[in-house]
Length: 450
Image (cartoon, rainbow, N blue to C red; front, side):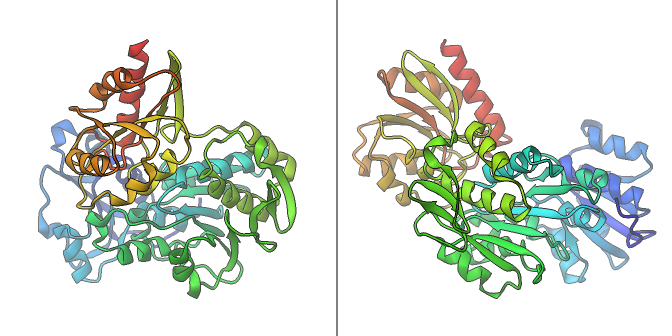
């Protein structure tokens, strides 16, 4: 960890706790900052705040006094989920006080270079693939970011021998200034999180922060098939490395004669790849590009691709019950993710979907419902999804209270060789704290059927 002095004796407000806020507050305190933490959860119910108070950190809980933000502040470090419409954040910006996320802190203290991965879909799978390839290739990777491990905690342990592989959301990337990964990956861009960003244009600009500070010595791995991604990247100074599932790229990564190839070199026959779903080829091509740029040998890459079957909550095979196949795709928090999941199956499917209403409709889902024989829907978007299902000619539509109730209903509607797929096309926050909680409840309900 770099012994930086920039925060010494500076007043810093940490806004919102959870894992990232807790880690950021501890790190800033260690760096000599005068830290104030503000969190909405009352102190008597807030174990994280209590632990920080024991370290001598000033803690204000249960309310958000506007006077916490004033001209004496050096910076605000906010939880990524807190919107920029928040009154404290608005006041900080009006006073030209930097509003950061902990990813920026991680970069400032890290001795290790970063590989940063963003996109609307496929981030977790691609991040995990890259990590596994580097690990198998003895490149000393660490994994961090939106995937569940707080980056500024990982960065404290990293040395120059490590590489930090980091999944990055648009929420996190809005709060960076100097952050500059050695290799950035931009997988795709789909209309999402409009309740947070307002427009797709603003959402794309947030994602583009991943390569904003890159220079000629860095690489940007990007999807040649996504016009919006290519447009956003047109001004980058980084070296571009394209991947494509639709065209042959002799100077990038693509599929040729049934093989994954990189810079014209055949790596592996796609029939040998263990990870299911045609959409995962994008993630694989991106991961192979990063691995090859970091000089991972083909043997290590092939070994990972032959054995890696996916990550939890992302088209995760749960079990088979009386020849019904159950899949947990709870991480499908937008329409594009669900279309990818539906495209992975050619047999009759019972779709479990619904969740937080972000104001969008689901018409883009309709062309992908041809194999869906029944919809079991729940949450705030149930009526919207029901409308699309009816328009697609799905005759069996069931409304249920939640995911737990959806499982036995779906089973009753199913026949042998059917797929029962949880792929909500929505965030979980109307009913569940996280998509992981939603997925775990689905898996538990499936096992109870046995």
